[in-house]
Image (cartoon, rainbow, N blue to C red; front, side, top):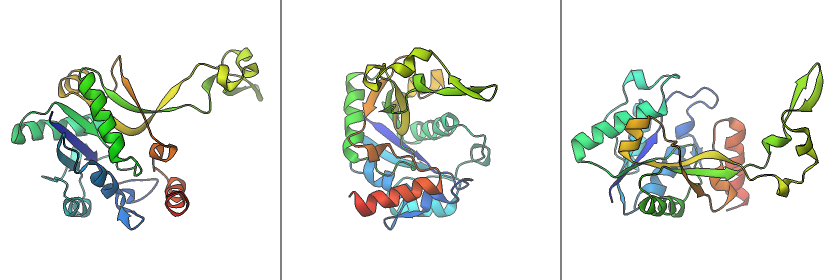
Length: 229
């Protein structure tokens, strides 16, 4: 099985400037994902899609494939991840041959492990026609959500849900952004990493779910390295 790993790493980021190359434990953030994917036997290449020359140079030194700088039209705030992925996939299959799957690895999930990537690939081998999606169980259950009407808090949904214990509520899950794996055919036809039926990929530990988007998230990541490694 040939799987292309794609790491999208745009240079512009508003809430945490230059986040994709901020040093975490002395390692640029993008390199955490590159290092996790490198050496996985089914992954034929780890391709970094970036519009930024500095990110490109850092990624190449970490043994990632950076064949070009992303076109300007795919590097603005309105660019979709699907369009970025299809651009990379189309180039790769034209230049280096067809692949069986594409893994999307966001560089903002630094604690995603090689073991988790292998686990996701193994699940894909069993059901190659269904997307594999990294998820986390919800701890703030939506049935306990409140809304404000007339200046007062009221239950957003069924008011009886607030009298239920958490363990009695239906288990619900959120996408954590750590892992997406899909066939090229599904991605091209549906233009989404999420299908009608998706196979859940559960993390080995809560730190793998961390998605760095703000300075606060980055401080949490540094705390994890200092105290929980």
